[in-house]
Image 1 (cartoon, rainbow, N blue to C red):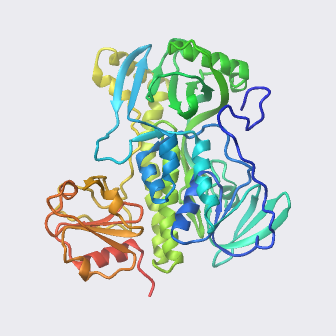
Image 2: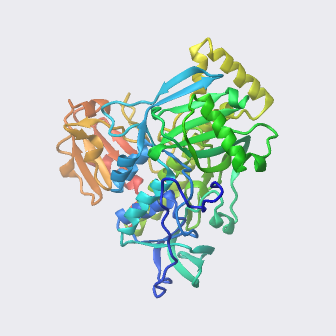
Image 3: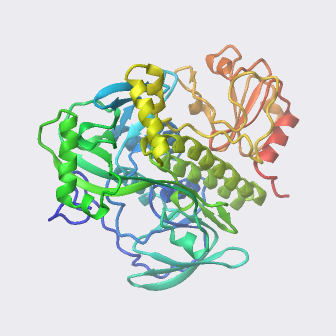
Length: 535
């Protein structure tokens, strides 16, 4: 919602583009390897990931522009690593605000200051704040330059039907209706996914009672980029408030509605303005500000039982809805897109067996359940679901005024990449290791010479090894070999001896590792990690 007198996309800081439906109708029905429904950040990342592998896609969205409002604003380190691999990172780094610190307050007194892990060995900060409009704009700029992506706006998908060896997607836009066929379909059409409904799928899980108004405002304030959480503040007794700084002097304020507070009344402009003014007074700010946009949400942990339905894969919010606490929604969706893109591309190119696709749902649904476990703890603390939880939360907050350990209960448990320990395409660990990165985990960053270990990774699979002779014994078309000296910091971090090796997947998760590697063991792990290469 926007203030009275402003159009739906009339922003104080961002110019929304307008996209027409496809004017060239001659090729609309041509077959495409992949149809992607939804051109939000997750759908665009999937399209760019496929294009990076040389795979064409059709990207379809019912809207005529980007999503309005800042929406998902916190982008995690691992998402920046994905954006780097897609070749789109530069504008994100230039625009976004990196941060490492959060502060929590109870009744005006600070009870916690947390610092997310960071060091000179890391290429990127743990978290960056950036409005979703810019996220979509930067991804779109890359898509507009990419001939392998056919983007179609103002195009509503009305049916996704199985054809035996693919799907038939029915589309309607202002100029007419048509059908196209594709080998595979990715549903990236968000929390209200039309594709999910068409396929008869339903999200299952838990709904939380806590409701929040999210408001964007523009003000010139020199407070640093620090996540602030206010518990039981004077301006909203019993509630919780979150504050984030964003680029272009835009600030996000999330404030909890009271039990029984009428939503329709709460989101009236005059009431939003009054609530925001009260929060700013609580923060000690008495300068000028202007209201930009606002909306309302509640915290839910919902997911599909299976993220695959035949030749349709669900990614992002179409597959799962997670609470915002811990900034996991967008980042989880970007990881979904990254995961399915490299797998689908290799199947389409004949470099992997279709069994590889069976690993998408267990890996990414496992990541969602891990998110639920952590985010649910945060959600229960931020918005206690029962009187009992409220009593325990308030007791912890009161204790935090005198005991530092109690303040740690207010830690939002920021997102970390999930380890695919139970994945069907990840090899069992070598018991000779006592440290390093276990199979299924994301390869940690490390300094190598004047750069970073991630700079050495190839576009496909990468073998990191301290055995100089191992590379000559391997022949695999999708494999880059990186030689490390055993005495380097990176090798020591990975606990590598003189004949050790790590096999790293295209998404930088470790597929296997060996203290004493052999060419045969590496070939077996590559075969497992690709679902068996077709004969």
